[in-house]
Image 1: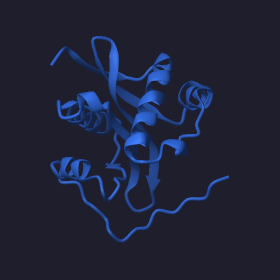
Image 2: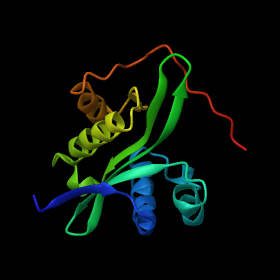
Image 3: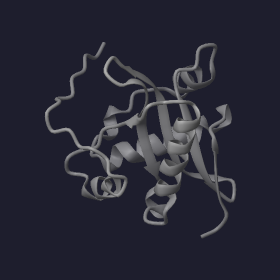
Image 4: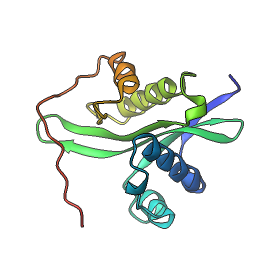
Length: 150
């Protein structure tokens, strides 16, 4: 594999991050569900009060993967990092990029004194589930996702 670099996302990365989010939505059979604008993504990640961060995986200056995260607080577990999306562009899947991103996110989380990382995975996404099992991830069948849209 060409030279892979994992680094923190920068404001200028937002257009490519949004492209990867849309690619994931297509893979998850929900391409019309991505309604965020580039301006909102930039403001929420790099404005006066950033609420998300990301690690990007870059090969020869091209972003091929992201791990987008934000703070979460659990009254039972304390400060946790929520992994919103771990995305590797389809052409680069299977090359170990997802592992490198998740490993780096674990290192980042420990350094920042988080107590753990939490995320969701679709029940039909066997390749992702198998990948997460390699980390001894705990899968919770009891909780139901709930949301309210405005």
